Length: 242
Image (tube, rainbow, N blue to C red; front, side, top):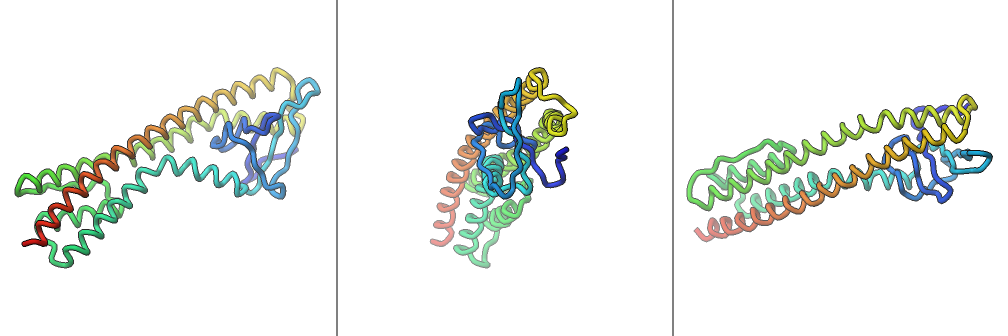
């Protein structure tokens, strides 16, 4: 019978080509697009009628890889975008103030460089006039939110792996059994598969909801970045006029 070897991927589509089960759990509900050179397939039957198709893919086709990468990009976009913002701010500071940066602005420049390199626990304690203290407060708030977003992303990745493991293991075992004849492709077993597909669909819907929350949070962090950059520009202009 057909076994899922390392690097292989199992998918089940309905009669319209929509992915109903995915051994990696990332493409449910999407239209299947395969490179014929990478795919083996077999019909899934119930009462002698085809109800879907099983695909064994090895290696992961470029079309699926693109869809999967798009999904993961949604989950990591806030971290990447804000790290880029931090890098730009650090560059602006370096270009405008050169090697003579000192005092509160020097501390801010160092903190921005650290956050851009992934040290998200960086915080500032700026003293001086009220504007500097507000600048430090806004930086700390953005860095804190960025750190929380990264922690949430890592926790989400771990939770997804855990929650998808059980239904995917069941689906893989049942589908392999149907392929080698040890599990009959009857209505009862197809119903069990459908239950697991529904469970996976619910999990993916929850992932979509969480990804939307990440995007909304990204907008809030971008607003904080814009406010911080405006305040920083005012201070830089004042510094250069001295």
